[in-house]
Image (cartoon, rainbow, N blue to C red):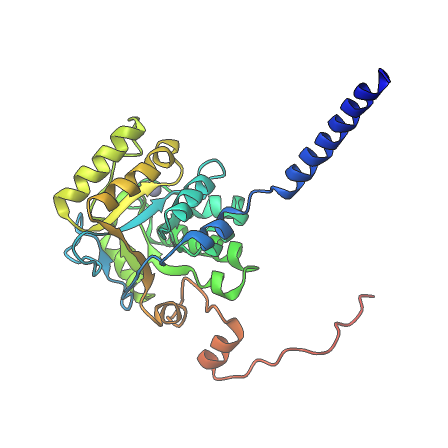
Length: 307
Ligand SMILES: [Zn+2]
């Protein structure tokens, strides 16, 4: 008799263990993108940016702005993909249902192609930011500078080559000069390839050694002084990831909204159809047949066995 309560206790403990294990097995956190898809009531509005002839945008350096309305802001993130911070930033953007543009560095795109694919799969726009991010292309020879730009596009394109067509299409004919150090001749060279250049209307100094609170304060202050435009941030900076959620909420409280920049319809094809293009067509076979006037027949023959 004295044994019974102890046995019951043991059985109860066993039952609790099973219940705990079952609950743990059943409770798995949904992937961030899937969770965001459930919670987003509305998509981030998009703005089609004309890229024909390669206009340069951004009031900090150029007379032309992308066509944003009052209190509309386009977020841009430079210098990634970064294995430590880019996904953190993607999660925050998903949580707040905001889509942005990522200007990627080729060398990092080549090193972390899975993050490039994730940025695309989560619906963001991808532009490029040279191959190795020299802070200033101006001292480079034309050939060297062009090679830097070309290789930047090629690296992102290679990372997306195995992605679904919809995701490959996220690579836009958008380019940003490292350090915003442009040159007239390179803007023209990009323009001949129907690739637009992007500066910004405001930054937030997130590349300086300041606190995340300071980044947030400067972003909000700089945006308020202009009222609309493109904000430059860096997805390589932990301080940017730290302030991003509070920043988005503060902006919305002040009546601002976020808009995603995408190429105007046909922009990607126009860039791919340029002479000596920097990006290829998304549908390679189709576009090639249009461009070359030939029909590319897939080979149904099995390849000849190696001897
Ligand atoms: Zn940069």
